[in-house]
Length: 576
Image 1 (cartoon, rainbow, N blue to C red):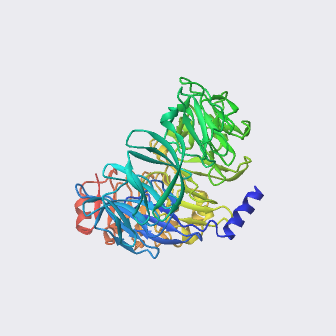
Image 2 (image 1 turned 180 degrees about the horizontal axis):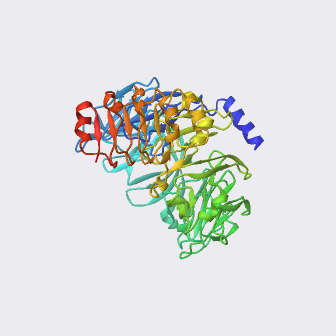
Image 3 (image 1 turned 90 degrees about the vertical axis):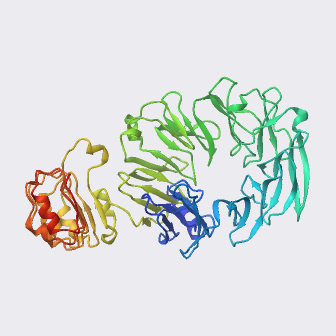
């Protein structure tokens, strides 16, 4: 673990992780934030705007300006804009649809015209194109025109004129091509000189009666899975050479090579998975129901005996014992797993979602907050915490969602090498121990209300033993939620927080409110619903600054409501 943190520190000092991070806001009325490698908020996205192409809550910023989109009110189309590094927003009313293509280019519908290749500097480089993929490292992408397909460069020029029925990029400068006679070939781009392309024909696929699954391109290692004439597995390298003798394995269960290993099935009806090497030799017998691709020399697998998840080494042996009921493949040298102490909460059959394996059960369905760990490739725990979701957006940074429900946003980024962290500007502290770890100025919103899974029990809990001693030091506190807590002994401390703007005391078994309540001169929202109040103090009638007063589900006399409305005409009074 020590070596891992030394590696983190070296990479950070070299600037290899100097990448900004996009964090999507949880609330719909906010857009999100761009966070710098120094842990500062670079800029905030306007409300309702999202980064185009990113569904995850956290993602690295690939290039500037960033393409944003905002959902239009039906039947109006979506809106698009550029977010510049200085935080300025440049709206693009001429675009009604757009997609990032890389190299500062967009595929767009502009002024009702489809197939526009649009540069972020405002130039239109092509029209009427059907662009299927992002631009690759050579600056080329497949584009259709007039019913045929070819290749265009980043200037919008055709390097390969549209003369083929189909052109599919397989990576490693190789393409699967179908000509107008419906003959299929595996071609390799030999060189790209201006607008001149030269090809090498690697394999005549039609002559050999081979077929390629174009959704499985060449692996990073330069290997391609091909289905043979008799459904056998054929492995090719980037020169079109056979890497191994043909194998009688179930082709539909084969996945591309990763780090010299490929996951394969057994027979056309079998579901068991195993591992082969570049020579086509079985490294690991097909015994596994769930087995994911290798990453950082580790493959996530389900133990056939216990049903739990662990990690295999390249030799097919357990490198990290199977003792988890939720785990991810390695990313940036780390894997996210649940705390193995919680195995008794895991039930049901295993399920796969992307690079995640998990067992549904009480852990998934009834617990909002879970205990997570980060493992290095040796199985050492380098980080652990209790939260709702965990991400690894960029190397050396872990992102967490601590919220207890949709109404309590709480995102945090932590840099593992240095321990510095960033809190989302709308962060709500929901656990008392979190307050001790933060500075007093960071605690603006504190919600100790019962967690959602406890609310159905309607229990009332005591406040933390040191609540009265610690609360006065929170000088920036504006929003305090003590729902489902016994807090009658804490009134003196609460009334001393003159900065409070929101105070929520739902279901706290209150029978009376203090007459000094109007000392909270900045209070805008007061919730005392679901209590046992039979009257309100006169001081409430003088709190003209209140915007919302929630008194519903209290045994208050009906005659009180007209008096409140007369005394507080600008206050929204919720009483039923």
